[in-house]
Length: 557
Image (tube, rainbow, N blue to C red; front, side):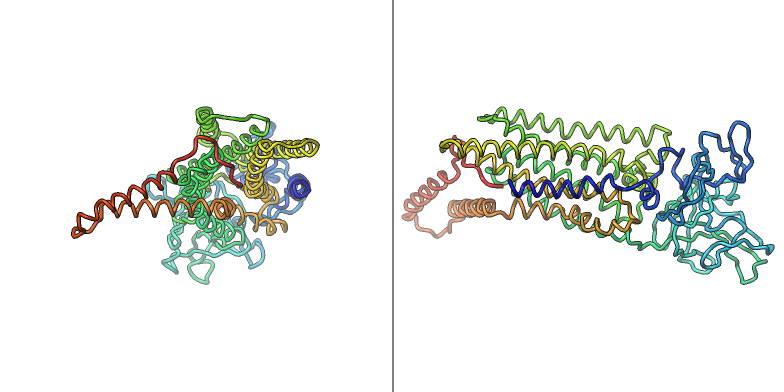
């Protein structure tokens, strides 16, 4: 119990303060998530301070009338895609809700001098035309100011200009929704990953000029961590498969908790596989049907995995309430109920998530974002918290409550047994329940704590100095399958069961070979001895495989 108390205190020390201790300033500084007090996400806005405004509260910006309900006061600006700074309160309009947006690296009529944008008094030939591709594949030269809402914003400090007139590998395609396709990398870039700039055909700025995109450096720290996590998840999958094989192959492990663990791992395998594909496949069009299928399917199986974790917690807590002697028929019915709960409730979450993304016109930062800029829920907005981490938090809190109640029950039983002479069967029952609780403890530490740290990492944000601390937690969560394999398969008791099963399998192969693979030249006189030998082996084998009608001694997990 002393160790248990230490574990609980460490968990509370790590999880609770970090989750809620960040001030509003920290959130605004390090997060891409919007503010519920503003009408939209910052990167969907333009500064309308100097624009014409009307009595009804609307503003006119570059020919787009922005209604009063899409005007908000912002007291910060983003230097790049992740770093914000405090500024005087000013008005911004959510123009990207009314028209597709595209970023300009500098305001129109300004140039970048290597460190910042500067206005120029020279009479440059500023271009407005750009080739645009529609979804049906047709191309058209359009006025970028008519087709898009232009937002002056440089997404990152280090940019790489693409100029197909100088380098064939720099070929690019701009789509009507503002997505950029770069042919050299065969990758689709969202608006947050590039900006348009003016390039001149010669050093003579009075000559022909063109609009070309400049994309961010692809190998950022956050991007590198995502790639490492994807490979870590792929590394973890074979160990989860091996764990499933062991728990399905050995009868002693096919109990209620073993089957629940298998279902949990199945959810993780599908979720990890699809999430890795979506992360590592740079050629995947984020707006395609394939991307949406990957996103929604992985979301469902991740949610199902968490509900199976909740089932394991509940079943262990329920058993400690004093229920004894559950027969196999009742156990099967209970497992069916658990399956309906764990596979069914995530369907409700999936339908709600799909409906909020595909059938509503709510604010984009409140939409899941699957199939828009990512093949997964957009973790850069509040969508990650609303649709993914909120149900996870409730499940983790419920598991913690059941964990503490189970620990208190064990402590109470131990004190009662210390006062009286414990009978042998009572001692055995307590040992059985303590062994199950050990399984619960391992699951809690491996699964609950790692996912709790994932939630904290979400609130900390990718640009915070705290973020690097949680990179290790991200990796531990990704290699969860390996940790589960070491905890639940590489145990002495389980390894002994595996050894026994392999021995029995070898004996069956030997019997089969003796019966059906005899040499044609074998004398008939030996048939009687062979038959007697086989009968003896078969008798011994039947003793090995005959399961007793009584419940076997519990194993430690």
